Image 1 (cartoon, rainbow, N blue to C red):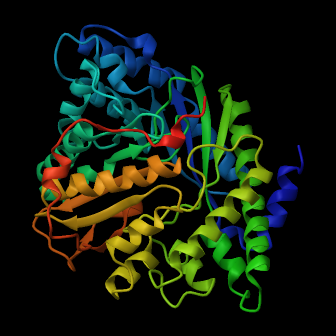
Image 2: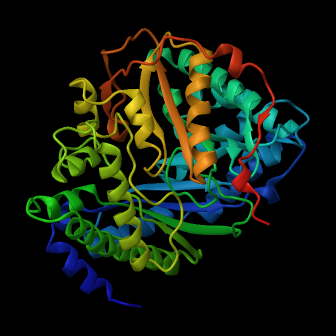
Length: 453
């Protein structure tokens, strides 16, 4: 071990430990042993296993918070993609599984539980269809359950039938939760190149290559990086990158050591640390603020993509030096409503959805927590999802869409989702329709550089 935990915390305190937290400890649980043709019996088994395996997660996190003075903001669970179990169901619904997961999360004091998921990059199994048809019901009838669907990979291409079906689901989920400003969509992510060990919500699930149970940790350090950059006006680009690398190293090392302590206390193996900079709506905890301290007048101006690329690279380089096993998404998140600086940039006209899409080429994920007009058509939503998936497929990176078509609202209105989900402006989308393209069906072939055998 490179440093003792006390030494790392002493180092972190020099740049303001009060702005640093562990965003999440996520316990991944394999629920394949719960398989049953009767969905209700399966749900009972899922509930029992989740409660049994994860019973010590919240108490352990509280002990570590008190011991080291570092907040652990969220305690989460992810499970094997539920579509794997759904293939055996005699009834065409997976909603009882979502309700069982929600009940288990409430009993354990878990903030979110994820894995109501399907992997459809090359087509639909029966279980995938059951799961996808259940998403809107599941998200509107639970509080803590999150869902994700992977519609493409760099090796398989993009399932355009899946893209369009997920656009329909996004629209349905928004309409079904209209009384909460389409909040169900904040718990739904459409991925390209989804990773198997992501601890962050809403896209987390325990991949088929993972252990029976695992602990993954996600850090959150925009405030620490921001504090370190406040006196960086005279630094060159190289010196700025070096400073970010050093800060990333420190916060990653602390996060990994907290994760390993949690692993020892619970008896659950430690998996990875996701060294992402994950912003919150709180003042001073913004990726946009970091970019502006690096020299932009306002996030979204020309130069933003280059600035974000440098930030993302420096975070990864420093974090990988501080972690034995780095994984998940690892980089800078740019969720719109969860980042006060990003919202300010949209409100002032500096940032639009086209520039935001360009930024997703170099960020950690994609179009995240983006509120769009409620009357946006399924065709346009499908086009946005397809664009993001294409960026991921071509660049061998994870991209995603967490789009929220807010019922009754138009571009320029403001929506408030509360808590970590934040509030912000409804961003305008294109008016022209991609309908003929997105409804052709079939699969966009994988790019030529996918052949690496």
